[in-house]
Image 1 (cartoon, rainbow, N blue to C red):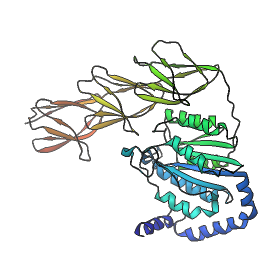
Image 2 (image 1 turned 90 degrees about the vertical axis):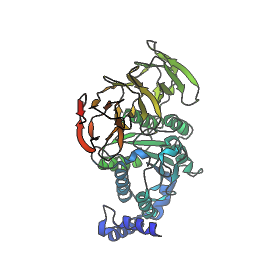
Image 3 (image 1 turned 180 degrees about the vertical axis):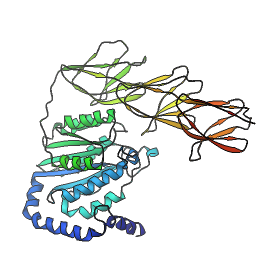
Image 4 (image 1 turned 120 degrees about the vertical axis):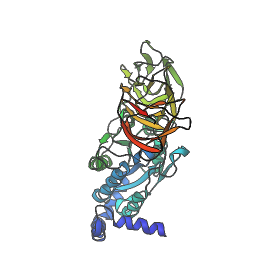
Length: 440
């Protein structure tokens, strides 16, 4: 009861309505009730829409506009509820909102509402939207499959799925291949996708999902763009799908020495491998997954008579002195390799990565074909004792410890403190900078 009271307070404090919610809401209900009559039944015969909302952990990040991604999504849903025709038969589903990321729950998707004319679910959806918390993984393929199963099996009209996401699928399966399979025998099903400030890999995947299903891809960078994209997607019908048969080619520039394994996303079978200096691989037209080291480039479309060229990203650490630096995919937490003096670079599919320097992280956004050079700074403490001298981030977390056996360390640029002679000394470290401290 206490939790419901808090949620209801949030509803009535909602940004758009403030103190006017009761008046505005009742006006909206009455206005929609006037037109819902027979036309709503007709709408149900013609068209049904399901909106899939991303509530994976990455939605806790901020947009360049300063808004939290999840907040932008909530505002867009609110706008849709208030602006869309009340006769629209619609339902909502979310993913990533029930289990923490560490659990890697790839079944984390649930319908928030059943299908109903919009006017019948406004209150419920407002409460559901406010209650969304960004927590876990992003099982996009699973959410798409579940969404299609949500539609009544005997419905003969147009079925529209709108997927909102800020990243790619972080679970097993290729959502582009899933979308192609879902729409293959469903001539009235369309999937539109909306990318919320996405990287190259996520945009490629979302564009592929839309293309193979006769849908459209919409990009959004702020809450206003997202709201407009969401309304446009809900109101857009299916376009023409052209599935040509034939053979195309695939090549990977800068393939790692271990080669790049190519897998047919529809069958899961190995289709070949790309090695350095090898000619483009001939493949039947379709959707493929390409292994780049331990990372995967999904939703790669090979078209008849065309050559698809993939350009992996390269991340290099300059002037490495010692140590091993883990490379982790940010959203999944999966370690994909290491950078060390023995090999001071790593080749990866485009994506968002964290490079570890001890217990501190250097976040990297790697686009297609990017050549990223990290230039850490160096901290040296002369006269360091065996007991050690802790280096901390401003929040107090210890990231490294210097001692007489390890008196120097490389760190990402940033603000730190170091313990010397019982006191905390603050310092800022720049790229490639060497800072030397002296213990008395």
